[in-house]
Image (cartoon, rainbow, N blue to C red; front, side, top):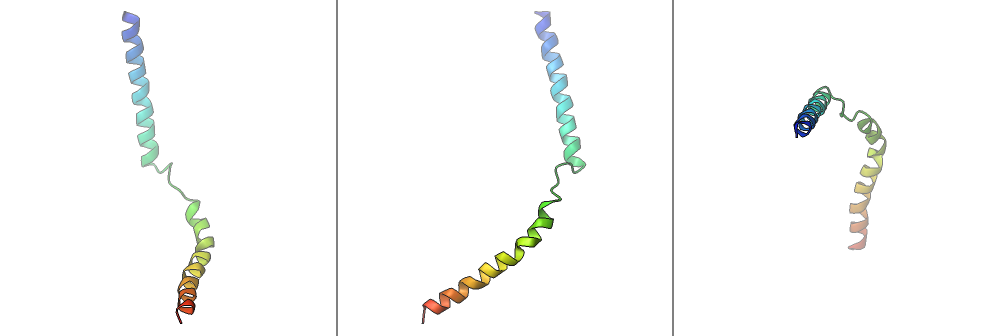
Length: 63
């Protein structure tokens, strides 16, 4: 029975260690996305072009 108490206490210590490591990684910016904003600017023109094309197509269909 004492082995179960030992294993439970060790697993709690390991879980706390991983939680502290995760919180530290989040606070230091480990999970920040630095790549997507630089790539997003390459596709902004396509989004603007599609948005500007839609009203023109709708106005041509109405008359």
